[in-house]
Length: 158
Image (cartoon, rainbow, N blue to C red; front, side, top):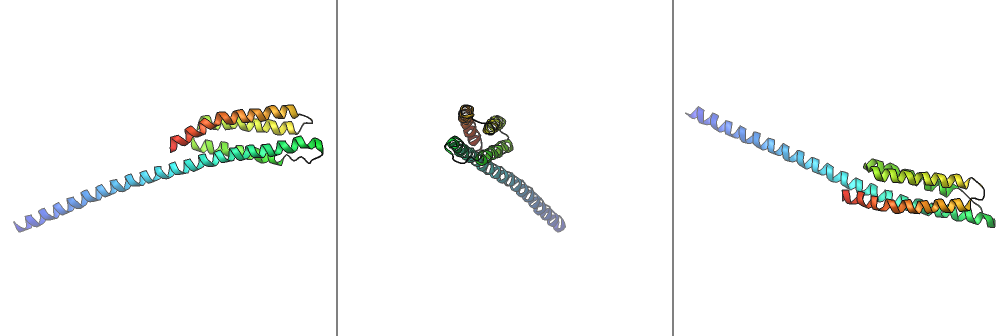
């Protein structure tokens, strides 16, 4: 009987260890997946914040560039550099929206990028102040459309 009791005890200890090992593995896997999800959400929120800031900075550069464009008539120097830099920021914002998987936001920022391209092209023409003003209005309108999409994207991950 002694051998049977020893074997019985060993089997019980072995089964207990096996159950504990499986449970530990399952909990560790679940915690790891939750940590990955949490990190992904944090990264997405950071992307959305950066995207929003880049769009605001792009508009500020656009304002700077158009201001010097209109002052050119008074003899001030005009440089298209702020317009080019603004367009770069819009392209970066579009890439961020694409990384987030936000199709409507990516599309909207893509449309905004086209307007920035049009503005630059108009700057290359002479005396197109009226057209540039219309395009700047289009930028403002497009940004107004994007704000709710940015908010939705942020709320989705927050």
